[in-house]
Length: 201
Ligand code: ADP
Image (tube, rainbow, N blue to C red):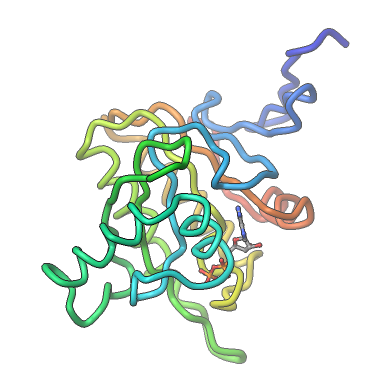
């Protein structure tokens, strides 16, 4: 099979040379990777409300991006959110030493065991991050799997919310041409692909 061949299976397409799947006429790519390495206009950080760094994606972004991100977050705390960034909201900062131009920080819902996950809040994170990128006329954005790590949101329940929210956003006029969904573990990408609800545009 020649490199770059794209296979179409229903609404999704598979590019075996790059091991990623695409949806919505290739505007959405689903891949396994490290969010800090993505060369896009903005990467999204699954932050906590302090905005001052933490573990998981947040820790990786702050440690690889360096002081500039931390200082910008401290400034946002001081001027706009002294009590912390509420869940569902998003703010944008510079990206320091990362290849991306900006980092969009959003705080996902915490899901307690035995409780129904807050899909409305998770959708808000994605929608507000996309809206912030579009407001800045950005063309590409990469998301990690918000809330599905330490915050405990079941990944198979996040997938329909995430896919429907992105599809609905991209159905309106927007500067965004490319949305990347970056999974750290191949098994998380598989779970997403099984549970996503992208439909033919
Ligand atoms: P949250 O607190 O919102 O649950 P986490 O950072 O704990 O955020 O995890 C969210 C998801 O990000 C998990 O699926 C985790 O495996 C993944 N992840 C962790 N590090 C990275 C990274 N460097 N790039 C992409 N995804 C990552």
